[in-house]
Length: 196
Image (tube, rainbow, N blue to C red; front, side):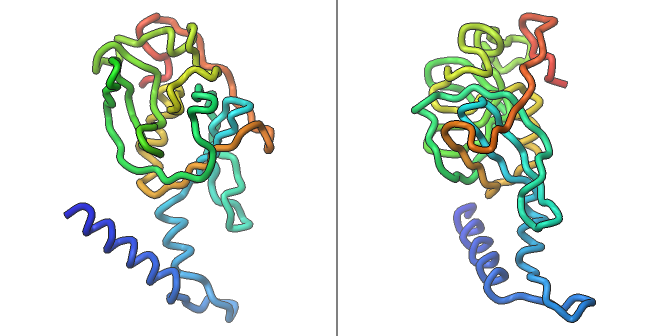
């Protein structure tokens, strides 16, 4: 049923994209489909592996995703993290990893890869594994299995504000020179300080 609904919605979006315009007050035409897409997908996610930064772009006056809205320091998996343009899909409040551990606010983007929070021993935000936050496999390093790991605040923002279908672009190096602040220091070694 979900697949049928997804196919139906995709076909509707294609129909709208290919055939709907309406006149504006200046005698020109406004692409209704473009407005629908902008409303449905207010953000574009962009990862520069070279700067370990995920930037959330919003739509600027130029009608493109050109305005940086938020940025977060990330961990990625080096060559295990693919480059290209991906689509955010299935989401899980808690994701369990096959080799153990859990992550909050997981948003799927490719194969078995997700954007997610730091790792936890249990499905409990008071069981943070520090090594995946600011330890040996810290955020800001090439230390994941291919996923994009970030502070809980960032993973939660994407989980709550970037619907299925949101685009995620991942590039090698740092062609735009994006940057992000380091993760905040832990005040409690078992809790992400951004987790509110």
